[in-house]
Length: 330
Image (cartoon, rainbow, N blue to C red; front, side, top):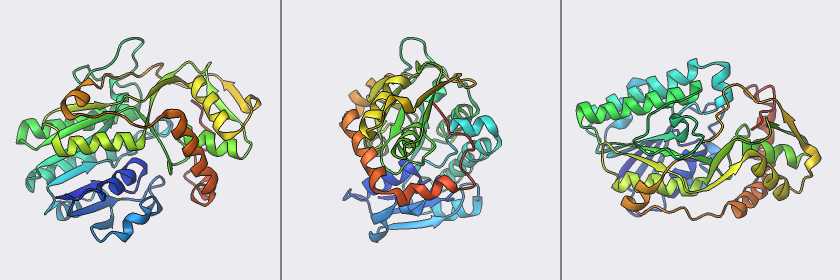
């Protein structure tokens, strides 16, 4: 099986590529990544030692390159995206360009080359906030912020290629991921890297916002199950981690980093900060046998330990021109 992975040098994509290379049925993996601020070849690490992997530096908006790479691949797993909510509030245009137009470029090429399975990786944020209950795969899409809106649009573009052309599209929507080597703008690596330096962290509102936290390895297992056995035209929610308020998450991060509560500052809530996300993941569990395996507290400690051991991987990013000017909160 030959697999094209877009965004494979990013956080989730790189973990997925390394997990793919552990499978005996994988003949070759081609990684396409634009290496924007959040994508780094270092994330792929030991994958470069495997002759079955080829890395290509390029954009999914480059239609000629995408068409060239698509040939000979039976599977596509599409991670490439602009993904940070705060950045989308500052400028939504790159999100529309990459997430929407880029997805169109990919599905057009996949249709031309008769790709068997196209897995489009999405997010629980497309469902919008839920004050109670859970979103199923049939729930309406009610995105709040530009990032989520661009992902909802890309979901529909991908699914339209199944309905119009019969492309073997499956969509996965996961809850919040965490784990080693995540760019330090998302809440867990941001807080960990600040707390390890003895710097304060900011929590929006009273920390009442609820998110489901899923270790990246569990998400990759779910995506792999969909790539192998998902039914074309279907959507699969990938969740099953732990629901925490941001206040609860912050308390756990203080503990694993050995920091005190005096480093936490509460600030007014940011614009359009959805109160609660929640998904039903019964479908992927019953139909594809997916179950999360990682323990939240153990993996938060392991994640903090990774950042403690590897400052050379994240410290230079703090001085990057792409770093957000104000530390984000949750």
